[in-house]
Length: 326
Image (cartoon, rainbow, N blue to C red; front, top):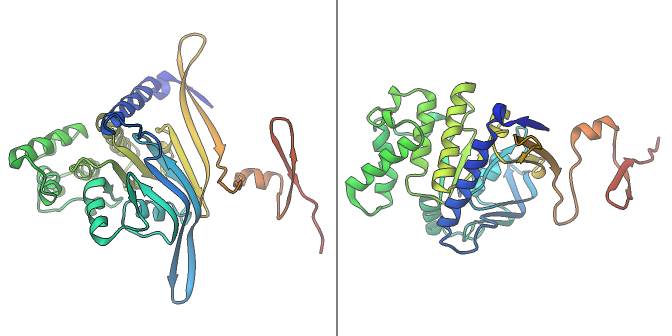
């Protein structure tokens, strides 16, 4: 699938990606830490209620590099919000590996988990009202996390940084307004500034455009791209919004508690010198050699129960298996 640079803004997307990678390298302090900023391996989360067990994550594998901006998509109940809650430190996994930076999320003590949530990650909720305190101005909301973390530099430094972050996400003009005086999109962009006030390594956003119209949602996502590019923050967005999912270099789909497929987008230069955005979809192969066939493929060939596999020189052929009437 291709699209022209003029219609899709490929040069801008490519440039943002390069800037994000450069900022991420600077944040890593020159060390070779650009791989595996977020790692999940065989991640399991089981919820128990009144004797009933619900398996939300069933051995999920995922690796996100430092400085990436990744969208995670999936149907309701697929496990994507559960994954986000685990990675942000709001929930604890049942088994497997979940690591962000140098933090093992299965073994965190209460004190270390608090430090992780305060300094390493930022979070933006879908509901705009959950992100901001209604009696503080936008600038005061951004300053508050810095005050709670005891950020050095004093009041003037906090005020300056708050103003810079609000400008970065495009709402510098809202600094002295309270949330009730802001539109939904302005509230979400202020919330992004709050989430990165303490310079976290990772920003998680759970359906940040879910309550917004298309145009306003685009403004919010532009703010996420700006934070990724300007600060080198790794950004992970859970979304149902296909318009959002197609604006990132990598979209990961979750189905039935496992990663099922990925779409990767690259900018290529055509023979005439014009840039185009090329999207390629891949099935995800886990460490046990398992993968999920796309539902459309399964339905088209009426695949059920068993399939036949044939190893060819450069590919594997999948065919319907013999069916029994018994």
